[in-house]
Image (cartoon, rainbow, N blue to C red; front, top):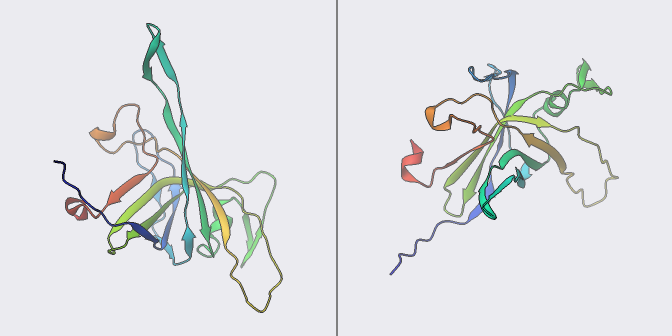
Amino acid sequence: MAEIVKRGLMTGLGDGYFQKMTTEETKTTPPVYDVEGVEVVPSLESAPTEMTYQSSPVNLSNKKHSDLGKLTDVRITLNAAYLPAGFAEWATGAIKIGPGAYAYNDNPIRGFFRFAFPATDEFGEVVIFNFPKCQMEPVGVSPQTETESKEARITAFNIVGNALLYKPSAELSGDNSNIYLKVDTREEDAKD
């Protein structure tokens, strides 16, 4: 008889971790991230994620032989009250023209960054999601009049995670590239 194993249900979303990429990676060198460190915000509401898979089936002898498709990117709709100060502006290619002042032109050069967040289960165990090469799409504004109930305005930040060209280990060699990493610390060995 099969053993039934119950696991904790995912119930929470932790802080958002953002780090600017200062130098893009190549096939032989890893990306370089801002030495000033990681910026953390306790403002995430949800982060629905969708993978883009491009199927490319190969039919031989009148039947499907293989699928040479690939995962091309991941799209995250990050619903958050705010991001680190000036981060969304930098990531979407705005030009800083003064303290707290940004200009948007018609040809923004968007910055790459790393984005990570922990998801928690009902027992407080953590699953970490790390997206090492992201870009943010320009963010609109949606101000509304304040009412007596004073409802918070949550912004939807659209983030696209791209595959890294650099492959740090033999397990990741070949034609495969990392789009995101998941570490399930509920697995005892993963905690190290």
